[in-house]
Structure formats: structure tokens, C-alpha cells
Image (cartoon, helix red, strand yellow):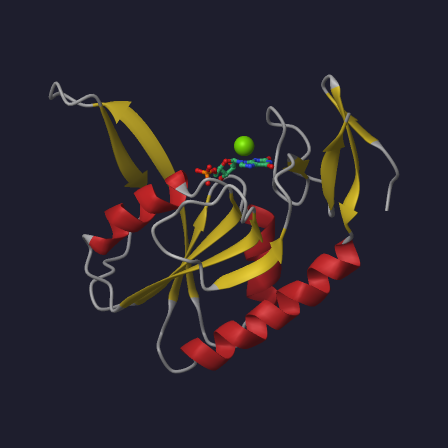
Length: 179
Ligand code: XMP
Ligand code: MG
């Protein structure tokens, strides 16, 4: 694992190694397989951050998972109600399906609450969240996520899909901001 990583104006130190991540990904996959085997689950990976986690998780899953990549987009609607959220990229009907959202990180939980609300209107049979990272100290989401890779302190992290101003996603490990 590299030592310090410099991105734009900031420096990051090694935090969760590639080996540690891969071990945990295997454990999560085993848990998901136990729950979803025979249920024809569909996993929705949230772009851009979750791409690497989703790819590694999928290599381990044996529950015959389907995969779709989605993105939350916020736009100014035609009504005076201000900004409207929509989920783009979804091409499969989710009604009566077992759905698992794959996220990179849950911080305040605002993003996940938005996604949860949008997906509940599709009437899935079940809806679960699998996130690589959770910051418990700042998380205020409506639901506790079911599958979490690592709980971390409230510090900015990059790597393994996570970016700082769009850089750092390619790193195979997670790094945390140092000051
Ligand atoms: P919320 O607060 O809605 O935030 O749960 C989720 C989104 O915020 C981004 N985020 C981070 N991105 N390092 C990052 O690279 C971090 O430490 C971090 N904390 C939050 C991320 O896009 C996530 O989907
Ligand atoms: Mg980001």
C-alpha cells in the first residue's frame, strides 16, 4: 500500500488496506448469498462512488444477482416546489422484486433517504442497503442499513471508488484526510 497520497491540495494517509477490504467484501457477499439465494435479487449500485465495491462484491456473489447502475439526479422541476430528485438509469421494474442498494459511503444519510423514498414508490418486495462505509456519528437516516463493510469516524476518505473533487477513485484501498 502506498504511503501518503496527494490529491489536489490535500494529503491522505492509508486507512483501510486492499486486503482488509477484500476480506470484508467476501464476508458481506456470504451474508447476502445466505439471505438472497433463490430470491432473484436485483442490486442497484449508485454511481459513481460504488462502482469498485459493486464490481468486487459481484465477483463473490453466488445468489444469481442482477445488477443495474443508478444515479441520483436533482433538477429544478416545472413546479414552484424547487428541486426534484429522480433516479436515473433504472431499466427494470422493481415491483415485487428483492432490491439491494449498493453505496460507497453513508454519511448524513440524506442521499440514501432520497433513494429509499424514490424506490419505495416502486413497491419492491424488500429493500436493503449494502454500504462499504458508514459514519455512525453523522448518520441520521430513517433506516439502519443492513449490510455495512466498516464503521468509520467522521473524517473525509478517498479511494476504492470515493473521490476528492473527482480524483482518487482508482486507488485500490481507502485513505483518510490528514491535516
Ligand atoms: P450523505 O451525507 O447524503 O452523503 O449520506 C453521501 C454522499 O456524500 C459523499 N461523501 C463522501 N465522499 N469521502 C468521499 O469521497 C467521504 O468521506 C464522504 N462522505 C460523504 C459521497 O458521495 C456519498 O455518496
Ligand atoms: Mg463524491
